[in-house]
Image (tube, rainbow, N blue to C red; front, side, top):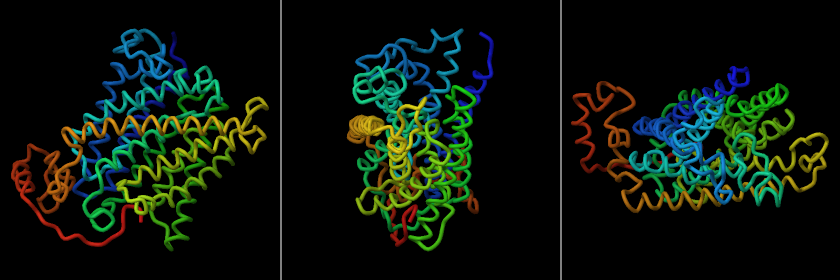
Length: 441
């Protein structure tokens, strides 16, 4: 089959989405302490390596083809993708891989500064296999939540064009569960060193995410008209969310922040993800404003409820993912004059379908993440030692430091001072805790 413009667009979109994971590494890396920046970025990069292999071997097969109890595809149907050689399906397989990669990478922000890298390496392929692949099959692969599935057929098919449930709700719930399992960082809400160390990195990461998101949302567009609507909505919603977040900060705190601007952009991108092809541009603006304001307020929940979500994955991805998913019950456009959300006279049917899909995604991710996370935590341990947390996870887990300050930094294990520094940081240390605000406060 000849290569068409559609094929090229999907391949370009896949490249854009793949760039989002390094972009996320900058976004998250800038929000951590300086002595945890490399570890945070490595958690995103290793997700590319591990999920890329899993996807080729069995991940893609689990999201497509013949289903097992409408829950996941047979992992051996296209094992190794050998059966797809010579077909255009390899393009779609590559595009799908980039979604799985970014989804699991999102989780890492909740456990910044305190997770063992080896434990994360074990968690990533298991979680993708047990949570992401089944959920992707249920929503997009003809499974439980599709129009032909048991749940979708009973309550109606939920709209999730690009991953509100599959990507953001599942990752946000997993982030919350892991944060609870690992517990709070030392000095949570008090240590000034836990504030973001490099805001320019955060803003660069947000820019790369926004750039890549046009492929994330637009890669599956079926027509030029649909692609145009997706593009405009992917521009409008995060723009409005940034305004909504900054307005909330201005009213609540007296001044807007650059961290708030970057976070608002991501909140808007998350919210528009499930709705990008099904709402009007005005609807996208309204959705963005609401998502930006709600997520800005949701950041404070971790202090009130007592869980340490280091980089506010729950406030941004879970909350915005739910807002975007449920919003379709109100503002989804009618199709051929029929259906649509409540505001278009479509009745409550679509809202019910959205609620059910969100609830199933939450339940699946919560239960499976708890099982995986606790199994790792109770065996090899998921959290680094208190001494290593104080001295820095970069040095203890990678024998590296992110910055060279007066010759004290280490660029890799080959450095002549690396072993000496690693040995020194293993010695018991005491620190004085100081009072400050958290990441987004």
